[in-house]
Amino acid sequence: MTQIPDDPLPRLLAIMARLRAPQGGCPWDLAQNYATIAPYTIEEAYEVADAIAREDYAALPDELGDLLLQVVYHARMAEEEGRFGFDDVARAIGDKMIRRHPHVFGDEEQRSAAAQTIAWEAQKSRERAARAEHGVLAGVPVGMPALTRAYKLTARAARVGFDWVNAEQVLDKLAEETAELRAELPRADPERLADELGDMLFVMANLARKLKLDPEAVLRQANDKFARRFGGVEALLAAEGRTPAESSLDEMEAAWQQVKIQERQAPGK
Image (cartoon, rainbow, N blue to C red; front, side, top):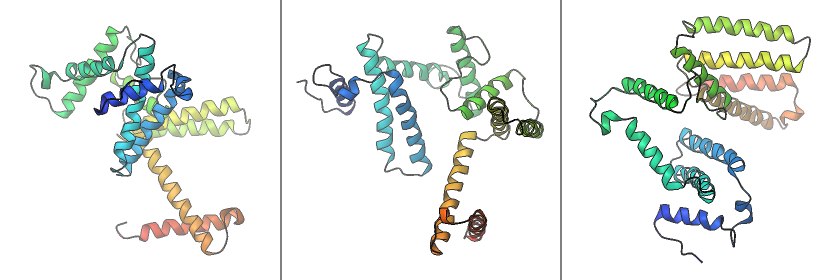
């Protein structure tokens, strides 16, 4: 049996190789492929973001380790197929960082953060062109969360002037899309409703961009607020000896409004 080294990264690579070994490996790990592992990769990235949002820095090393495992997993499967290995992954990202920071690793003058953002995007455009990705929207990953992809698609289009002048114009468009969805409600055609609701969500992502807000972060914040307030509703109802399921909508709404008042009256609000 192959000895597992002590150094952290070689140790992790050796553990993954053992898990994927045809003889003596883990049956579950051996059954996986890129497609089956990809959802875990996305999930682990979100768990990293969640730990950061909660400022749970004690949990962050574990969450980052889970995310690193995903990289190691994909690299191991690729190595088994003779495509590339972990060293190729690390080398590629190292080369990219040097290439995209000539003001640090090369002879170019130092840049402000804003200038670096512009230069970074210009370099990415050149790299896409080298890969024969010539369209303005080329290279925006299909697998991104939908709101984030909408944000990035509209940001790309805005670079060539296809954009609203201000947020007020986006709000006007949102009102138009809302009216179109409302008009479809009586017909109750699922495909038409989905199309109109999709248009609304796309405009909302565009509005977030015009307001310089991250739509995913804004929606996460709204989710957290709803969960917090609904928890407050449950607590108020429990104090009266009942659950939400045992309460009327009016009773739950009254409790909801009470929770909102309590939040406004809390210190620092």
